[in-house]
Length: 535
Image (cartoon, rainbow, N blue to C red; front, side, top):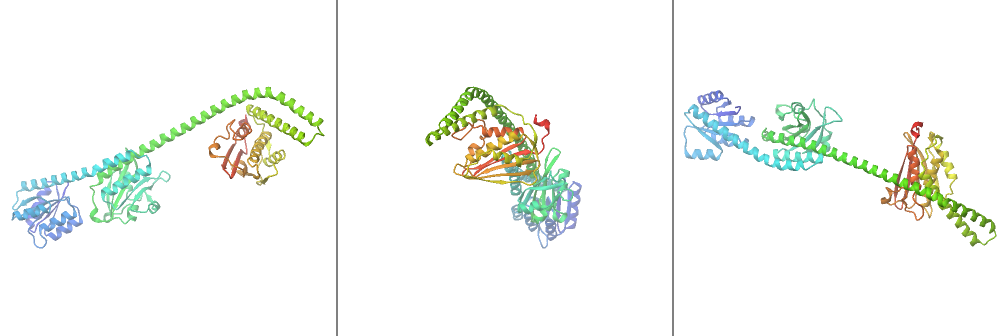
């Protein structure tokens, strides 16, 4: 029993008697001798029970009762009277009185009436709490179905502000990146940018006591300082409860008001329950996100493994095909090449039409031979023979071996003082040659080819950018697949060969493309490669 009682009567003997009797019964009691003083005390402090004499000079008991119910509708009021009338009883009941004490008073009757008023007040408050908890069940269901952490914070905070009638509030979480500080995860009644700019330190902020004690509390501006965020908002009170799971306190749920009459601790149980639900739901959401991330990563690993398996199967098929093609076609192609050469000599004086067809034969034989060479190069994995290579010189040699169409204009951009790399010059020339030829083929009507070098950290970059037709988005993910091609001629091994060469040098090759604007291939090669890694 810890209820606070205010006794008001213009008879000091009555006040002293009631105070002594009720204090002996375990109540905390104050006594005043006029209605004006009673209203001042009711305004300044919170009482659970009011015992007021009806007949008093100046402000009578009924006016005290009216003001008391205005300040605190839940206060239990008992009317003291020596002149009980039906009219007075009706007025008292209309104003919210729970009982009557007749003078002279029997002690047992007094205690029974006060106990009845206390119990009635308790039941009323319990009923209010139950009604307040009904919306909590609904918001709990919504919290349980939400996995976005930001939405969880906003949902819980909106409910807390609405149910408490507060003017604002915030969810503050311990900042893992800055120990000893709290960060604003959600806020109401204040612009989010302003709230996030406020520094909240556990050791200095009053709500730090909630974090360390693990218990909710009421803070009042006239009894001490408020939390930094509530203080900035101009609050006069705030209710703060911890967001905790077991012994771990994640942060706090905080609401505040700017009017003194809003001050109450009655909402602490509701806020504590909501905060506990929010903390548990946050942990579940984090667990769900972690599991979802693990599933996604596992799915990516399985997809990569499947792609490697498919690639190895293609390689095996290509190897078998290459051996068969090389055996079956290399010899007849050699005979055809020799025959064409012989005919060219014998028909040196033939008309231009005959010479044109001989040149067509030579070109087709060369194209067929290249297909066989590509098949053999792709099927046989050659480990790089590493030597010290100057990438600029290597590019110059590569360009010298290629006949760039006249309608394609080339621009070279050379980086200054590039370090040498350890690489297989012949293999890199083959990769660069394929990329340059592809770029030229993507610009049948002419265009610009930009070749540039640069250093990015521990890597050298060689970029090949053309202004050609570009690659459709649906093809970008497949262009390095063996046997995938969008060309009318060719078997789709050039880029696959490039990728294999670059990867064997512990490098990467990336592509960016926009249809109608062009394509950029960027080769990144490590500047230093330990010899043991090349095996």
